[in-house]
Image 1: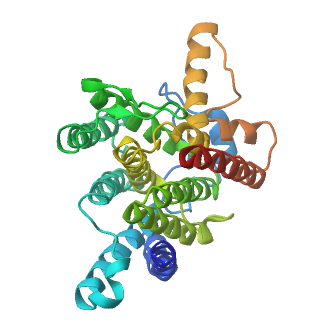
Image 2: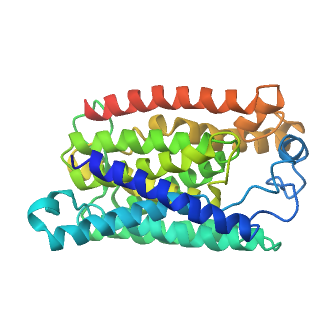
Length: 345
């Protein structure tokens, strides 16, 4: 009940919020005024723009509001009910200092910064520069890593099937920051209708299971609530998408995911960090394809993929968008099961 009630409540709240949010997004025409995106090198992303030019305008940003708002409302509502009716709701409240303050903070900060970036995008101005967003992620990650190291005494990461965790010492903080930046970079998976919502729902569901078996019921409830909010978003994001997750959703989710992964690691004798590349395999593949594309162009003078990230490459070679999305979901489910099994064992 501690897992399914927050998930169900977040889903219901998300479904209830959507008509109101969608009404104002379409009323304010909260989408890009001009089609097209730039590649990482600053030049027009020609192939990608040919694939998605008709979708870049007319579909609002800010879909991530549905996700993080439903999670925050669920958390606050259950906490309020626990104070008013402690006998009936105390066990369902999942805001706790030792488990969920950090992921809730990461979710809220990522949502706010991403919201500002989306505001710039839809107003016709250039969004917050990538280097600035990376600095924000790095700054928040540094503070959280400092909290892990100095307040929680965490300076190791677990390695599956090894009896002793790997000691990082002072290198724990930069390692945490690098993981946060890498996972945040995977947020660009939000590029095909239904893709990001489904993948993030699978990932957070897996970590809800890991936290549950580790006895971290508040973290499990938080992850379940995130999955519930994502399913509500996905209900309206299945092709044709009613709105996009956009930066306010992807930044919030990736930052919260990193914190959850480290909280389910050596702090409780688990291996949440080591299985993160497995459970988040679609995000890893997204980042890897971007890195390989840049490397190939600089070293060999030509592209490795028709277009990066990888999901757009599959579109470019002829896969329909729905096929890309559903095959990613299949791979995501298999990877999540494998990663969760390793973590639990």
